Length: 239
Image (cartoon, rainbow, N blue to C red):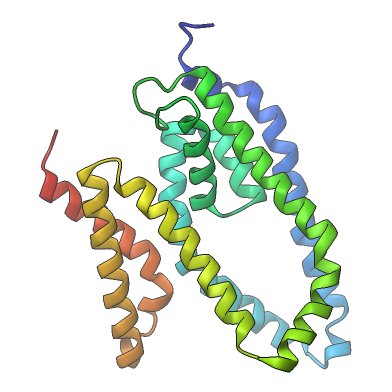
């Protein structure tokens, strides 16, 4: 087992026996959700045409954010294997968080995902961190979700803007922590982070100022990551 390459395990067809049922559950949930929404459309005074239009808008709107997920997903497949990537992203969908958990697991052994020293034990630790991270969210939703509406109403009565501010600050903190963790590991990562951040600012400013560029805000995350990868490679040069 010591000489076994962890990617042999990560891409083992047996892992699909665990992955496929999980993906199937997510697909079934999505189908049931859509059916339930359509069955209650009349209660909200929505016609079938309005429902179809809403679905089309939702599908188009999801393309932009998906670019960022797809980019990270390709990296996850390369270093964590296809079955694990499908399994984790079908349940969570937050590729950045999943990569962060994998890095934390590798960090327990003083290494990084895909780097020298990252073997079967480190891969197992990464998987456990991703799993525990997912369980954490499930427990939080189970215990707190039904109580948060009361908290939301009470807070909104005092300050209607505090909840969006807190939510935005929390998201910014998570992204900054992930970016800083990656940036300090190498000069290339630091350059990529800086280019991606500047690109995102440019896309946002253009979208706010010009109507013709407004769609760029939706695709900004994916485009910024691609620009950062290409320019960083050009700057750093081939290794």
